[in-house]
Length: 295
Image (cartoon, rainbow, N blue to C red; front, side, top):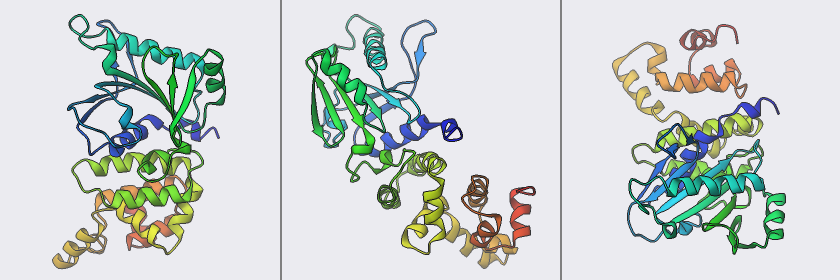
């Protein structure tokens, strides 16, 4: 468990929420200075750039300015966190260059975590709040919070449309991983690949046994995972064979692919022998090209 607590969850979440809402005119700011002094916090500010309807179950709640707090599986989502984020939203509201530049009626707050925050929900109800589940895993806090607030439990979301968030768990489900891989295969826009890699880096680190199982299978999902993590493999292979280059290049093993396989070896998802086989080179050649002399 200690190993999983060192995972940097926030970059994966930022990438996952951007992928989920990629079809809408939004801007994403992952760190915002709340005052003209040194106070800045690791919250996500999502701004609507146009007056458009958002059909996404999470995004439909958004107004023009949206303060989003993500808590990793290792972090607590408590009543104190709830009030802290409300206060952050208040600071953000007052951070405009002129009076009331950010109107309260154009703001929302979202708190997101993998598992259901049972104690927080109980405490809010005890304070007089009404909790309404708008969609599976998406709860609106009514009649108590300063600003419109939703609490999102990614583990309870439907897989369709939310797989990129659901795989950010210490207990990711195979069906969610498969759904994300299928979604990722269809994403071809500039910048998508980096975000997909960021999500997978976190998900693989937190669920090594599951991804190890997928990698070892001769299945469509295994091929999809290889395709996503090594997108230039086939192109490089064709170029290498046409030019008659050395075996490593002829096998299409681009520098980025070597790096990906080396990371999988370091994370103990693949052995050196398995990685070398996927690279189409000998084990000694793979070690030489990756510098994994002691693994």
